[in-house]
Every structure is written in structure tokens, then in C-alpha cells.
Image: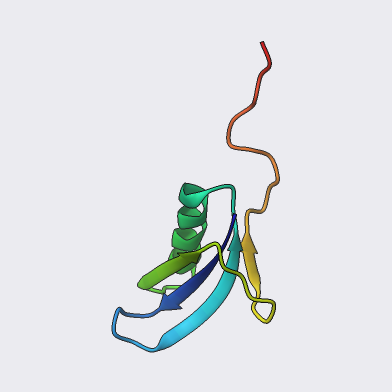
Length: 73
């Protein structure tokens, strides 16, 4: 799933950073956005789902393995 994240220092502040996010779903994208904002001391962020832009950097998971193992019975 693709999304665009908008990061700000504060809710009423101007936009500090915008990036594409690639994730496996809404929860995964929210987790990646939260971790990025926390690491860069950005206090406010929101996500626009199912959108992407070619002129922005991309945030994605460092590992390609899923959170859980799929087993066939």
C-alpha cells in the first residue's frame, strides 16, 4: 500500500517534511510514520492513503520479512 505522509513540528506549524510511505497496510504505514516522526522530533503528522508522488523520498521498512510467519496446513 502506498501513502503520502506530511510531517510538522507542531499542529499549526508549516510543513516540515513530506515523504512517500510504502507499507503492508494501514497499521504498518502508521507505525512507520510514527517511528520516523519520533526519530526526527516531529510532533505532528498525518497520512493520505493510496497516493504517491515521484518527486519525494520514500520511507519503508528496513526488513522485507513479514511480522508473522505464514504456515500452510
